[in-house]
Length: 211
Image (cartoon, rainbow, N blue to C red; front, side, top):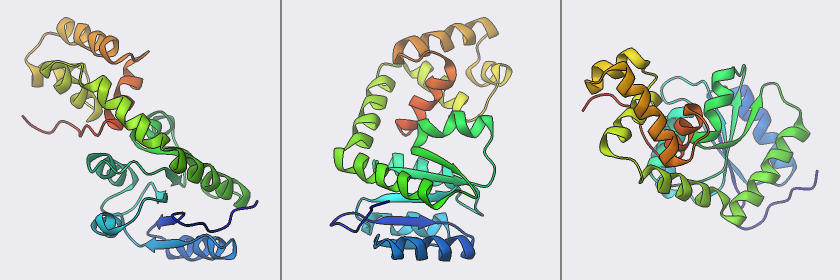
């Protein structure tokens, strides 16, 4: 694998496990890849405004702000950096949801060095082409087509609400909720409601808590 440091090419390593941080930083150092480590998601978020764009190696499960929370913050701040999400155990839900809220790679621990380095190389290529910015912009264009009610419904879906809960929160019948879900898919060009949720996350929508 031929990855060498270049101007603007930096990897931010965000993981609460010191063993993972140290071993990964050592590997990056041996490959002359400029890197900076953070012990928590909160520490990375606090430093974000002072950081240049780069590739992010992000642990999914951390105390406090986990991987998804960090990615939501990135979207809210319109910092479309390529994220390589690292997880000890992926699930069907993680695999389905992850692509829509930031990471362009999902690596299950333990992973081979070549797999990690290949993902970083692809991330640098994506960053150089501005692909992340394009995807975020396209997602926001889709969300802009939604009505106020459809916008709230999509946020409710992102928060994990089922049809019954949506009926109560939106004061609608089950039939009305199902019809609105279909209209949301149609308006943003999503083949199914899961892809609609992914587009909403990519656009920076936060889960519905109250209104």
